[in-house]
Image 1 (cartoon, one colour):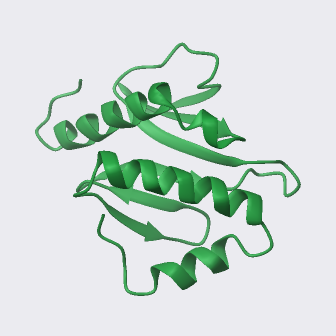
Image 2 (cartoon, one colour):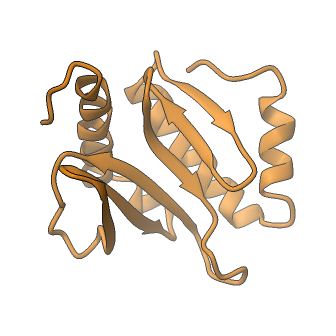
Image 3 (cartoon, one colour):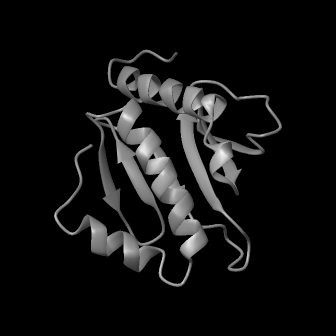
Length: 132
């Protein structure tokens, strides 16, 4: 995966004082790096964004400071009905952003990675005017 020059220090700053969330993020990053080696990552103020070449997934902290885990968000061309993908919004027609709470490394599983793979493909197809 392509990472910016100051990635390691940016990640430590992003997760400052939250070692459990940092460990979850590192497990997520490792899974994404294995699945999408050509992707790139960018650490921002409120989220960590994954591109391939367009944005396809994000990791962020829960809105409530004391809430456990991280939130993994991704875009699909459809609404995922699984209760695990609890929050979903349609910011544009046929473009759904889903938010999945991840509180344990075991939740970075085949189902989540399948959705992220679908999001990767969808982000690539958006530029060609096709929705999956």
